[in-house]
Length: 113
Image (cartoon, rainbow, N blue to C red; front, side):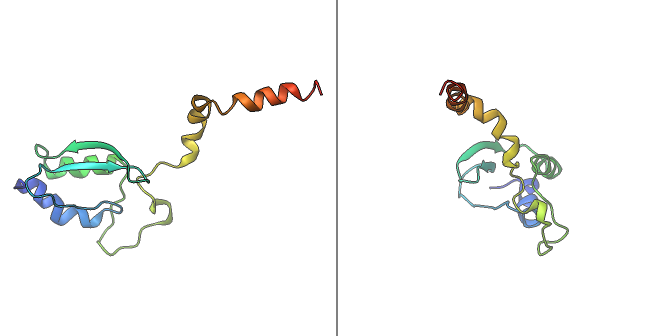
């Protein structure tokens, strides 16, 4: 059973958020499950002990776009919210993946040819 605070968030606030969906699992404690664009689970945040205001603040801090009304249009820049734009991830991922090593070797080999 949902506490009144969480129930109010689920029934009144969720419809205002873009890319936020409610899935009812009977008997399960309410939690926010964050998924990647590939629907891979990133994180689970329990909501049972949070107030409606705290949940709204958390969801907005995570980058979810809140509409004025459930049917309001979503601005272009928020269509994929709360996803972070890929360019911010690429520079940190390239060295870790080792993608830079082969090009650097190739560049070093070209003058020798």
